[in-house]
Image (cartoon, rainbow, N blue to C red; front, side, top):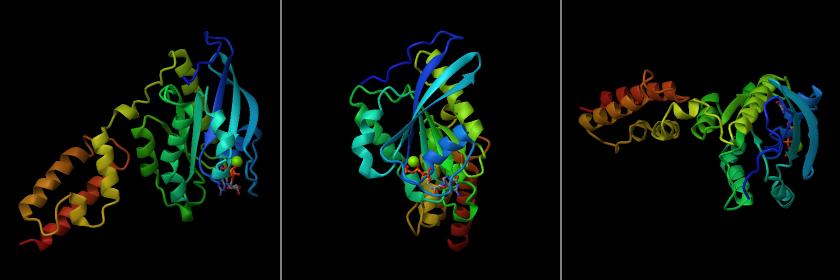
Length: 273
Ligand code: GTP
Ligand code: MG
């Protein structure tokens, strides 16, 4: 089903939008919404059963926005309940816990679930996605860093935010930008506004950074076979340096990837006659 546009969209008039929260159980979806709407935090985990629904009003520029929030349960058990709530959505809070890698790795599966439920004619291009890296207060347990999360989000043209429902850090800014983007989208005939960042680096750069991050040794990092010659190492290095040089590449994590490539080349050349 085609994601429909809200009914009234003349400038200055009120607007009704639907937003949903998505992400694994316990990543903090309900707490993020509670922090924003009720300005409080509950540390005890109370799993959402199926769907929680709430309405709030916000002001964006000269428009009053009535927001219908559908807070979804993350547990797989509730799939049957969730699947009828994906349609007619203008905004998605796509949440993961920076201390739980599984919850970050699961983001693609969440998008796939939504796509499947919207059906073959469903259009995810006219929905604003805000990727929320939550629980940044838990610095000791953090295992997904900012550049990795930002790279994933921005490669898809999604917004990215570092937040903590516990301390409130980043919450208001996130919702404000999220709502502004949804209003822009509605006023733009349902086209997602260009976030700039999505257009500022290529898929090849993003994929290369991800490959470098997950490489097992210096050979792997440069993409050469173990035992490769000096020439082969230098050739591979030059190709990566052109792709990732900080003057040329603004993809999140490119600076660290570039440094890692420089170090890998140095380490390999030391041992090649
Ligand atoms: P489901 O409803 O089961 O899908 O979970 P949920 O994603 O709604 O998680 P919920 O908001 O219920 O939070 C889960 C647990 O994480 C609770 O114990 C919260 O107190 C805790 N929590 C949520 N946000 C934060 C945060 O920013 N920092 C910390 N330290 N804990 C948080
Ligand atoms: Mg919940």
